[in-house]
Image 1 (cartoon, rainbow, N blue to C red):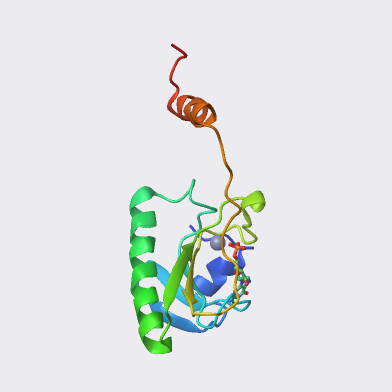
Image 2 (image 1 turned 90 degrees about the vertical axis):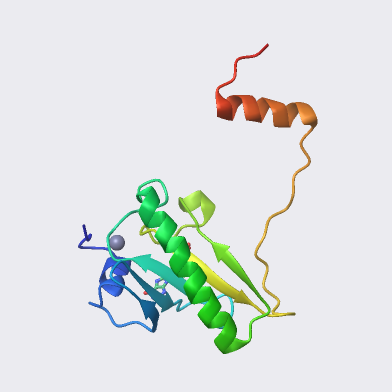
Length: 140
Ligand code: 5GP
Ligand code: ZN
């Protein structure tokens, strides 16, 4: 299904022009218009899914395959030194467009970008508590 008021539905389906770098029946890969680095691209499914929680697992898998293909093409063409794959879900995680997408971000030595996080330092007990909560394990 497409969503009438979704800009990425319109771009993915060619209703709004974009700088497309590859496409198949299910996805369009476009250049991000607010790129982190030169060649930053977005893999957009042509059907509307808000995020990773909505998109079917098999389509999500193929989206990653498309990200690999686009990443290889970008890396070769622009002589990138590395690549980040980023996928945000929810406003608090940095998602600003509610149509599932994968960021393909080529990296260049000394490109000055910061894509990462500040590492925490949980204790062994805290990690075990989290594991139990996630796995639904009862306390011994
Ligand atoms: P998010 O923050 O949701 O993970 O990523 C949304 C991305 O889409 C941002 O990097 C932003 O620059 C890009 N973006 C938003 N609107 C447009 C648009 O109309 N065209 C293109 N090419 N990129 C867009
Ligand atoms: Zn959409």
